[in-house]
View 1: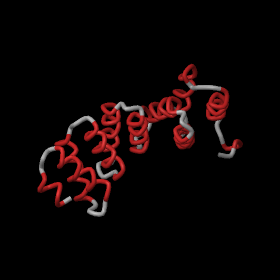
View 2: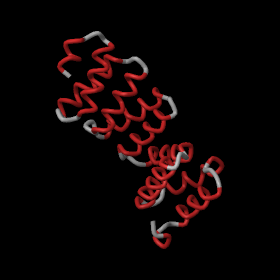
View 3: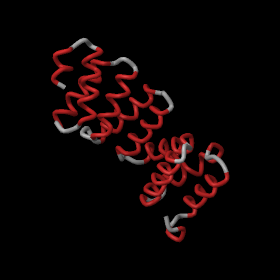
Amino acid sequence: MNPEQLSPAILQIIEILKNGSLDDNFDLVKISTTEELDDKAKIFELAIACAKNSRLKDAKILLKQLCRYGKDPLYFYNLGLIHSLEGKQNQAIESYEAALAIDKNHRHTLINLSSSLIDIGRYEDALTITNNATELNPNMIEAWINKAIASGNLKKLDVSVHA
């Protein structure tokens, strides 16, 4: 990101991230996400950078705000990933479902939703998701693997063997 192209709100967020956490600066994040569309893209970049640097709490704050003001499935998908990493599968599932409400064919969301469903023992639901995913794209290896896991847990060996 070129600093000359950033809004004052984005520059403030970057400065806060350099010196600590966004915890006490929630209002600033809220203000910046209501501004122009370009700010949303930059905030998304910051959220991903935070997540890549194990600053999941900051990434989650940024993504939650983006989810409130933007309808991009990637906001919800990435928030779901963070919830999943934190072991909060039910929250991950909610985020993935919100992403799919925007784009029902989002490949990575389908795969991760089925994984989270498997993690909490909702094998029938996972099987439904993986069936949809493999119909959309028969080459989606991760979906076939999740389908086999869900089927195996349901003792549906005929489905699992064909996966």
